[in-house]
Length: 388
Image 1 (spheres, rainbow, N blue to C red):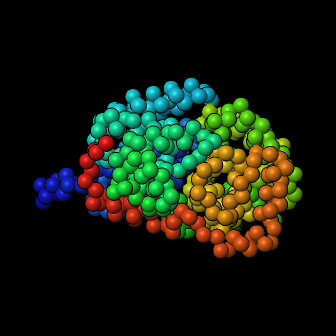
Image 2 (spheres, rainbow, N blue to C red; image 1 turned 135 degrees about the vertical axis):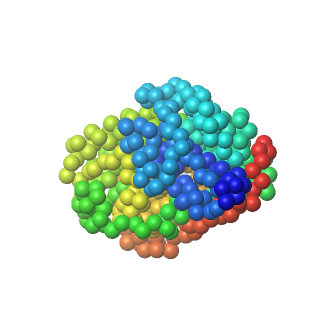
Image 3 (cartoon, rainbow, N blue to C red; image 1 turned 30 degrees about the vertical axis):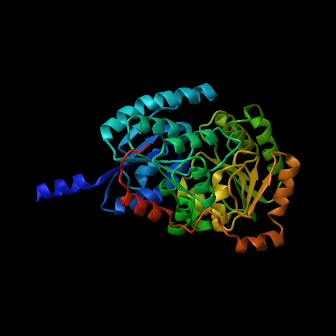
């Protein structure tokens, strides 16, 4: 019996998920769950980057709270809020990830997205000749360095899963073999489909807030290609928000990009001056974040969640600036410059009756919420050979 069990274990493929932020884990969660449910895989998890930073909420605890074992916790973030700090973190990541991958000996690694931590992990796996499955290449975010990181990871990957057919076509145009690129939709929609989102009353108890007549969810990340302008850009956002009446402003803080700490300091200062109608959280977790999104009147800022998830909840998005410029978007997304007057006009628009009526028929171009099943179905029949 023991010999049979060992043979069966040997036949299973070790699939290693890399996560460096609260955001990519939230998206990977349904995929990790689905992989664990299938007998074909042994699941491994490497947590790094923002997950291990007290400043960003020690979000590795969310992974463990969900019942997952983290095989490797790897600290790479430096305290500096600079581009040199990001570059040094990439170098530190490659050194540390090398040891981790050699210990784990995965058959394939799964990397989602476009951040510098993910690029470091991809470089490591590629050099060690471990096959790479990449989610979501082919996308464009013109206002962020992430655009270049994403393209680089796509070039290193062996198999690609895109969130729309347009992005699949982009990867093929850039030289990827069509038989190794699959349009599966966005995992964020899986979460909306499978999670039982919380009621307003439950959220109020958990967050210690009271919803107002009007409510907005705000997330603003630095435009890493316009570093000298971020303070001005976000000050225009805050100026427009400060003029609103009877509106609760719920901020989620920025990530670990260069100048992310600057944005977070501005949020803290704003909330301190507007305690009666503004709150801020370093991290909400996927369930609370999506539940909050469901109950607000709009999503404000430049987070990809406003582009990808919000349309499925029939919630409008005011997408500010260039960070997400180039992404496919639903008609519920209003693009505007980081300018007080444009933001003010967009805020007025999302409360117009005709606009809110149109939200009911919005079609989300990022799929119907079955991405995880599609991905695992494809990987079950994959050869797991490094072909790059």
